[in-house]
Structures are given as C-alpha cells and as structure tokens.
Length: 227
Image (cartoon, rainbow, N blue to C red; front, top):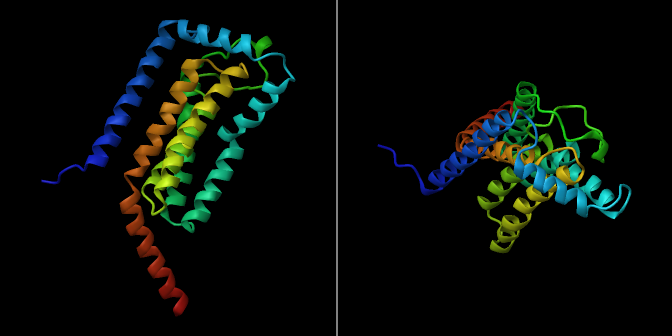
C-alpha cells in the first residue's frame, strides 16, 4: 500500500480548505441574490473611502499593479518560468494551468452571472460578469505555481523565504486592486484567488509524471537529431 507523503497531505488539505471557501461563497452569493454580501459592502465602502479621487496616485498604482493578474502578468511569469526551467515540463504545466483556469473561470462567470459593483464608482471598464474575479484567479494560479516550483528547486533558502513572502503577498495585492478599482467585491476576489490556487496545486501533482514524459520526449528528440 502506497503511503501518501506529508507534502501531498498538506497540498490536499489546502485544496480542501480553498474548495470549502469557494463553495461557501457560491452559496452565499446565490442566497443574497447575487448582490453584495455584508462583508462585501463593508470592505467596498472602506476601499472607496480611502482610495481618493480618480486620476490620483492610488488610481495609477492600482491600474499598474492590477496588470500582474492580467495577460501582462501571465506573459511575464510564464516566460520567466520558462527561462528559469530551460522550458522543461514546469513551463508547460504552468502554461496549461493558466489556460485551464481561464476557461474554467469564464465558465463559472457565465453560470453565476453576478453583476459587477455600481458602474459610477468603477475606475476601470470591464464587460464581463463579476464572480469570480479573473485577475485574482490568474494571480492565484500563476504565483502559487511559481511558489511551488521555487520551493521544490535547488535555490537558496533565502530566495525560498523571499518567495514565501512576496508571491502570496502579490496575490493579495492583486485582489485588493480589483476592489479599489471598483470592479469586484471581496467575495469575487477571494473566490477567484482560491480557485486559481486550487488549479495550481492540482497541477503540481503532475510534476513527477510530466518530468518522466519530458525526459522520454527529450531523449527521443536527441536520437532523431543524431540520425
């Protein structure tokens, strides 16, 4: 009988917790008829109170930082992972995870069809529905994947410690920008980030089989080239 490793137990436990968060908010969103939940309203009102005027410092900072959860962030992170890993199986796994997240998140958006916060308070134009947040889901899948790869690498303990702080903080900051910009509720961003992290952790279970497949393909390719 194969014993589940401590690492996999931790991963499965995190997935279970994040899945519970997702299910809880999905139920609550429907229970409140897709309107703002009490916690959404409190956090939204606070964000609108402290963010200042549109066009100010906070506006430009959030408009720039929020791109870390958009196509810009996807491109930068995936390319960096590719360079760092010499485009091995980890590069393909994070790309596949990002693609999976995009289509799965879009599907949920079309099923739930939650309207975005009031348009007059938005600092950014968005045409899609609100739940869950695509930027937060993207940040969740990208930076969770990157964290997993770094922790399993041969990099120094200092770099790994920095990654443990910076990458989760990046996810939180992207989530915050979506609320400050007025395009999402707290429940949107938390659910999105949880969903992205679930996908990232799930794909991490494929690292060993993907590595073996990559080695086989690489060996075959070298044999073909020699011929």
